[in-house]
Image (cartoon, rainbow, N blue to C red; front, top):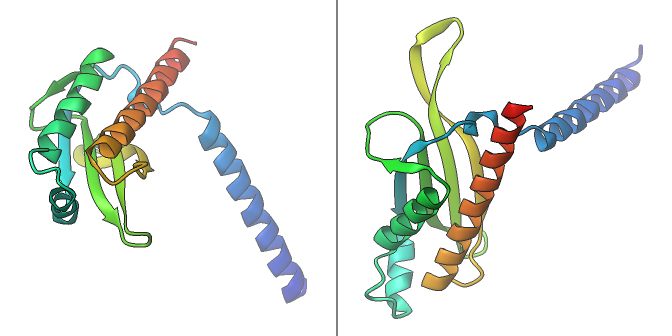
Length: 167
């Protein structure tokens, strides 16, 4: 085979693998979310966001505390207990500024301890679900709105995984 034919073949195989992988991921439920009844909650907000919130007059808005309350309330509403244990699953909310467009960005990660089949005694915290979004406005209402939307997506995908488990 010539170099050109080999290159074309490799590009075609890569393209097929990407399409197949994306389609499989889009259809599969997040099995790691099955049976979730409790999780730790972590909320972190960058100093840049805190500074910007103060500069727009949201002086009494405690970003971390209020977002934590919102997340914990959303979890309780769907039957998931927020807990403070030192291990197990964790739902992390990270608020920062996207440097490419100077807008707030909110990322929610769900992680849990996993182990390798070949070495079950070694545990690693691994992100198993993640979503990122930009609030419609860079203020308290915008942050709460996008966190609420992302938490709703988390619950929808958790419920889809639970239904798939019953089939």
